Image (cartoon, rainbow, N blue to C red):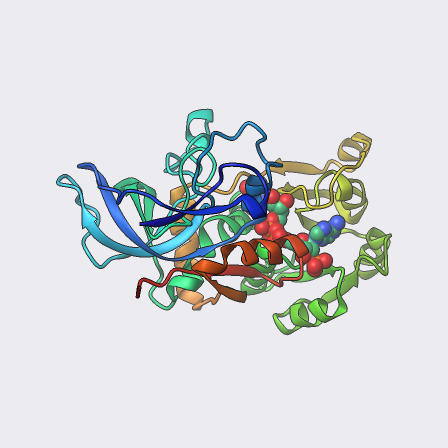
Length: 338
Ligand SMILES: NC(=O)c1ccc[n+]([C@@H]2O[C@H](COP(=O)([O-])OP(=O)(O)OC[C@H]3O[C@@H](n4cnc5c(N)ncnc54)[C@H](OP(=O)(O)O)[C@@H]3O)[C@@H](O)[C@H]2O)c1
């Protein structure tokens, strides 16, 4: 079967290889992969910025969706034909995160999804909501769950809250869709006015171009009449955190998620002077994933996919992510007709 492997770092070094067909052990399931979605983390993995000591060769990409085609002799949870998505961390079923659970992430600790067939423990899979295609479902395991955890598990977003979202990538657009489901107000930033219009079409209430307004925190203060926002989905990291601390309200909450804005300095004094809660988010457990899917199912929510690439075009998909020209998610379709 065909798979992509990271052997050396760099998008150009990604190689499509022939691997032996995987065989499920007694508690495992063989999944025919139909789609994979890309996360910024997968790009960092491929380019060596996530873990310079990554053990190679490894199949990249945490997120995928497919169909159960074979089950091990002791599998009770799944049958042939079931439509499934693997959990980002195969070993984090429920409860608190622990080091051992965290070391079971696909496309990093374990081989990922950018391949035609993969085996997973039966406990590492989740059923696809009925109204979603494989391509749509492939976007859920990391980006959607991270946004869901930030807003509703670690956070407690309410209809009366205002949330600030940074940029229009995968996590932020899911956060926009989820926040609007509960009726919260959304302020979203982007480097592109065209993307801001697309965010408005999805329900964003206030738009800020962070290139035209480098002091976007002041705009947030204006919009909120100097109160600040209740919640920030912080995907920028060190490069945006100082401004986020200015933009959040007293007693507000910042979900610390990403590193998109590169390096920066921040002064922790404002955390205490404003009594802000900073909470690190690491995707989520399988139990949170199932909980999120109920919400997605109830509201028939559809993920926003910018572009679908063919399996042979995986490098182009990574290049698109690197260019940051996308809005929402980038997907790679895995056709099995040859
Ligand atoms: N902790 C976790 O569990 C977890 C899980 C998922 C993702 N992450 C992290 O979260 C971040 C987002 O991931 P993703 O997959 O959603 O990324 P993505 O889809 O690649 O997001 C890219 C977009 O982010 C926006 N952006 C870049 N620099 C920015 C800045 N300085 N200020 C505001 N927006 C900026 C841009 O939006 P515009 O083009 O609109 O400007 C860009 O198009 C990454 O750092 C990723 O590693 C962490």
